[in-house]
Image (cartoon, rainbow over all chains, first blue to last red; front, side):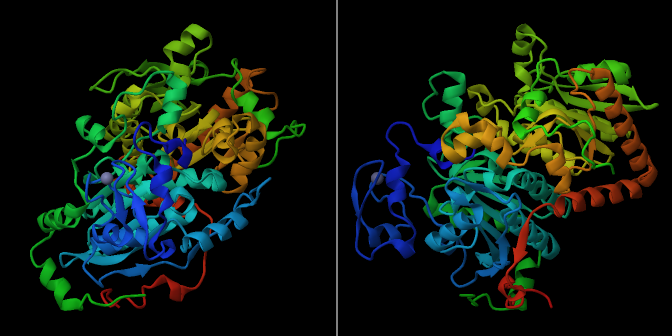
Length: 307
Length: 297
Ligand SMILES: [Zn+2]
């Protein structure tokens, strides 16, 4: 399955290399001017952070790191991370001229500040407790390998057990090559867990963000009760360059954008980032059963942080 | 389970096996049906857009009972390959497969899936019609299907387009078949930006039947004393024997027409896929569940 970040080079005015220049918060110097890749506006880094990393002039959505996303989505202080101790292994004993997979993981871990490409846990949105699974594109293009699959399945199983909605936020280049067929099988494993979540009558709301491709789009991320995409996000099965190379055709305007997917009936809605939390909250209230909120309030205060 | 390396194998490289798996004269799904099945009735169409000739399905008598056969179908010459899109299914192919799985479940027919595809088609139309969603929904349906399922990789197991009909209770592989997360060419392009290094990628990615049986992902390797294109009847009959044996085992353990047995079957299939993966636990304390004030103790 095509799975690589350089498949996602946007054609035309969007250039992810520029969007990538400003890494995660923990790498950003305090004071910095960032150029919007869409409109060219120079934005002060603190202002961009204040705006949820949406360009104040043209509403271009900069990519978010997983923890930035979680902070934007959940009620303040409500997130508790689960299963952070699940760590990758090297089942193929993978090595090439540039080194081993183990070495690559170490480098990625130290550069990204994360142990793997998916963060899972529990939080609350508008006081409704949810299971959360958020991928981090800065970790090997948020490629799905064994740890990604295992952590996601644990989050799904906990959602089913507690009858609490599952929210997934995905951006990914697809399956992780370095784990071979183990990676492909995570598609089956995660979807199988969602089948059981569905039987338990627990909703799954999927949020697709830029870019989302390959094995992630072709598995758990599109098996959802509600699918939401961010404006302008590129979402598809095969990367645009692969499609172009193989078909030798000019791609239609807006190919694989969120707007293209909405028009073709593949997603429920496009929600701009500043409205995302409220939209999810409204949806959650529709699925909430009588008494859910009271029971959640009884159990504990949500203001416990796990940092 | 016979996972032994076959006697005949004179140390073929992974790339040799890729070439065998793709050999133009290697038997394809319809060859298996001609040899093994009686009363084959092909069922067409996804009831929404079209009929995909790269992924076929229908009813056949196999080992004395009616089964739903699904399979990728490559062509034998250029003309047929164009009609069959080289075995690369489009969204309507996966939607047809999903429809036929539900059909099988409704009537209690087991599903036999023959996997032989370079991958799902990466085209403009396929993207417009939701290739990713079609595959995902086929995975979902097959993962939770209330009837026994056996998948056999007979040639190329190419990525998500293969897995879409591969979420089965038993996964078997012909000795010279391959099963990969992406084609060796795509892997080489992704890892090293050089599709020409496909032979090296084939080695590195561990895509042979023996490798995958060793990982516990594949349940049984079906020996090819001679490559399947040289002695097709032999390979097909060996596959037929293995399919029949696994179906009989599944029927014994999960009797037809018994809802409780179908629930056990679903649970067993879930466990089968649930445990696939390679990870370690850094420390239980890092899992955070202990410190979550909201979880019931
Ligand atoms: Zn802008």
